[in-house]
Length: 400
Image (cartoon, rainbow, N blue to C red):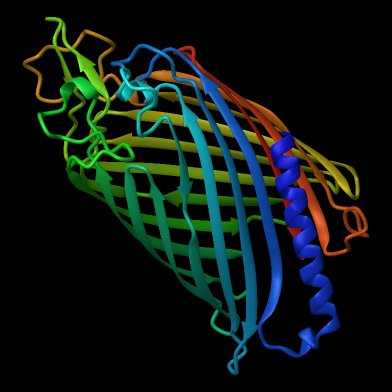
């Protein structure tokens, strides 16, 4: 938590200076302007005893410290269309005791800890005359064992009274994975991917194609609904090469899963404005894929304004999923099976996520900085029926 406060405080100081400079310039006369800046710092920690790295048993302990900043700019063109540009930069640093067991005989394997960097850039054009918004975005992600390039296209059209909106998003992600194998299962001359190891390793592709269709409708001044369908298709290396699987005969190998997967989530969201102080939100999602998994997720949240400038938001999420047909626990697979995994993330379980958010938005700004108009703190506790638990805390602020 101390790291989170320090990092956000430093960013706030830098941005305060940046805004002070813009006020002295002829900023308002420029076509391109800063709409807002969002800063988020978070920490997530978990522990459990079903690590896929060691075949479905062993520590799942993990800690992740993440920071992100996004800058939103806009301008109006000669046709009175609003252009929005969003530059987003994210960086996570994690430590994973389970991943360290890829190569347990060394002091530390290549994946004991790592930094994940993923920037993105998006551009959208809103045409009020035609009630349409079009957009495109590019994203890049890199970590110790993969690199990813993503492209997304979006289109939305609203009704003349803006009470109804249809939107479509289509995206493709092209990933390259480093096929890191457990130490005892590497062929002679196959590398570990650790720093300083010059032995070669294999690189495998994984491509993902996503489509999202949504329809939102304002029923009345208090009630809004949204329906979504988000099919996706993946192809390539969908198993994780350093996940071990143990067979009933005592032998073991690496996880093996099909080279394609089709997913179909369908969801509905409802927002109810119960007076000036209380907003109730609910969400339900049904999920099914061709690996045999079916899942149901229900999320509820209430946002209550204690004062005009301070609100609290308790939330709760329940999820239940069935296992994919290729999952079995430690040492329960037969060596004759075609596909096999002991990854409890795709096993059958129920989970609960409960927490609270606190939001401050004083009219004069935070700590005398008038552009710093919002700060929010959220804490969540995660519980899984397999015994895994996690805790997260997030600190977010907005400058406008």
